[in-house]
Image (cartoon, rainbow, N blue to C red; front, side, top):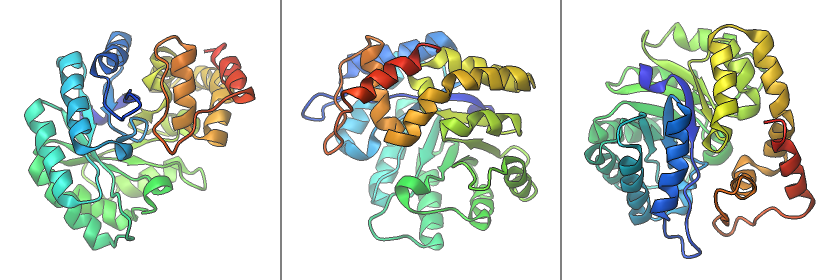
Amino acid sequence: MELFRGLSAFSLTPTDAEGRVEAELLGRLLERLVAAGVDSIGLLGSTGGYAFLSLDQRKRALRAAVEAVDGRVPLIVGVGTLRTDDALSLARDAREAGADGLLLAPMSYTPLTGEEVFQHFVAVTQAGERPLCIYNNPGTTKFTFSDELIVRLAGVPDIAAVKMPLPADGDFAGEMARLRARTPADFTIGYSGDWGAAEALLAGGDAWYSVAAGLLPEPALKLTRAAQAGDAAEVRRLDAAFQPLWQLFKEFGSFRVMYVIAELLGLARLQPPRPILPLAGEVRARVEAALRPL
């Protein structure tokens, strides 16, 4: 479906030292994404630090985002939590607030089985009554969705998309062909892992779920539109400008780097939630250099 296509820009969730969401600042960050013309906005994804926020603060961020975006751009809200009952509550809140779609990762402390993940997703989808995207993020959740589980979930009403990690073998086309052969025609397959976005889009990926676009929407949109137009040379030219930033993302984690970018762009002076420590010194200089070609 169209909700899960194109460039989805994932925003930071600004908080104060006590972890309270700064609603006005969040609104300003989202306004930049609306003005840039991104295809959707991702709220409370990994970039938004959802795992570090209480349920009340997540609900505060949701309300602030819905007010700021005001229906101008589709809003996809992350509802992943350790407990199913909490995820049900967040999904209902997202529905009632007016979110357009949901994003769900299988968070856990005890490793989950495939059946546990399936039942969890079915329950949350039914509670949310909104199109839902499967968040396959083994780097943080330590759970990897098999093709079989994705196919099974794709048959559940309202489960409409999957957000995939970059394939280890780099075979985007092969992975998408396998999944598309067994999922409904309108089920979309998109990718996170910004440094692989160019190749994922050129191989036919439906969506780029982008960290960088949360603060750098214009260059990310140019790359996305070039890929949608089939202009491989332009995509690779634009991607080359991103390469220093992609290297920093891989080296230090995109979450940490985004806080530096926000400050360097003059948008906000934010600290990541502890125990995450801010980047400093030579790394900050590298981030500043990486921003110049963008």
